[in-house]
Image (cartoon, rainbow, N blue to C red; front, side, top):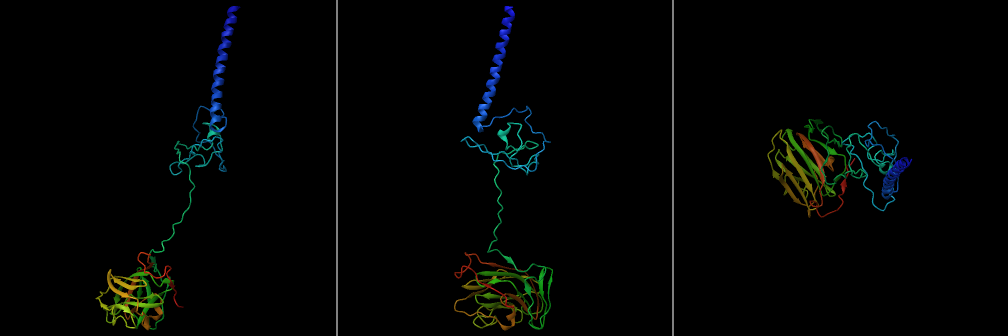
Length: 334
């Protein structure tokens, strides 16, 4: 009897010791959880991997996870949607109880292949790039005459678009086009390419604004070689200080660029400066023949010409003159 009692006493002592050990471990876990965020974890299954087929409602909404501890919470675990296809809604809190640490890790986003990132999700802000006010602006789309009109000079030839170029066919006198949009009057550049297709007189001759007035850059006039401004102090391109001569070959494209600042009018042909005219103390005007090309137009005289790659830009402050900060624009007269 004493032996049985001693065995029973030993069994109770062993059981009591085991209970104390188990209870102590559980209390330690509770204390650890409460120290983290005040929540008590539930027993979790041994398998810590979320099954791939675990369904997640599509209507899940993010739940704010407010930490009761003064210690800053760890960054939310998110997945990279570009790198892996997730089995749960990506980069937002999970409403389900996570099998790893229960509600302590509700924000965990588990991927099928376990590809996780600990970067904190940042809100995406859609930003639209502001257009550069000094960038080149195309004035001709290479397809049709949108933005241009054909002035009725009387005896003008046909105007067509062919192979990305505007063709000004030979007429009895003038054939041309006039831009219908707004253009600046100072601190700007216009650039285009032109060629003489047939005939012996000017082609790709450009009328452009100069402050409150207009002027014309003649290319290949008076028998085919005269280059200059019409008019300066009432003298045309064949008889003023801008007059130069250049031989133009038929069928060859020439790049033409005109720059207008409050101080000067400059012009280039194939990057060779042909005009550098000071504005102060001078009067600029046009010949009556190109009146319908104002404020910006291109014309040919008894010649078939072609133009393409017509574009314009406002000059940036580093290149502009000392006049107005805001460029004044010119509108086409109806």
